[in-house]
Length: 130
Picture 1 (cartoon, helix red, strand yellow):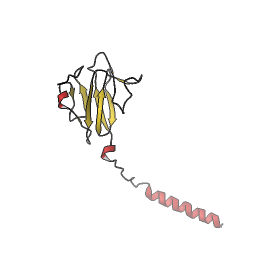
Picture 2 (tube, one colour):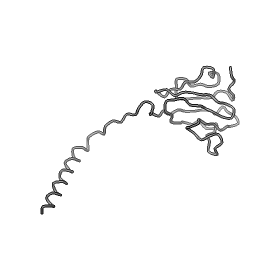
Picture 3 (tube, one colour):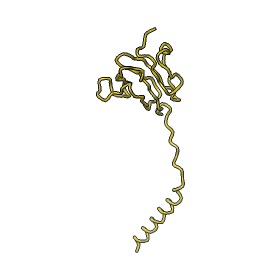
Picture 4 (cartoon, one colour):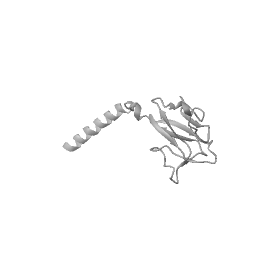
């Protein structure tokens, strides 16, 4: 009888605890700004014939059989930082800021668009140095 009473009290306490905590909101978890991922859309469909492309450290390398190709628009989840877009004929760096907005060197404005947005679009088949 002694153990039965103790078990009953424990079960009662667990039931009371769960009854009052069911409606409690879980604590909000906030990530450090540099750990937050942002959806970045990359449109390299201007590259004809389709070429493989890569963002080293994020996507498969150019030599991979599963590398991304320019015949599809892709959306990648990227953290704030500096990245390199590369194909066999094009290579340039771009950054993702804390708000998920893109920036890149102004000398690429003729062939790359999307500064201040989350959509990086290639407009040329080759990047010419200026």
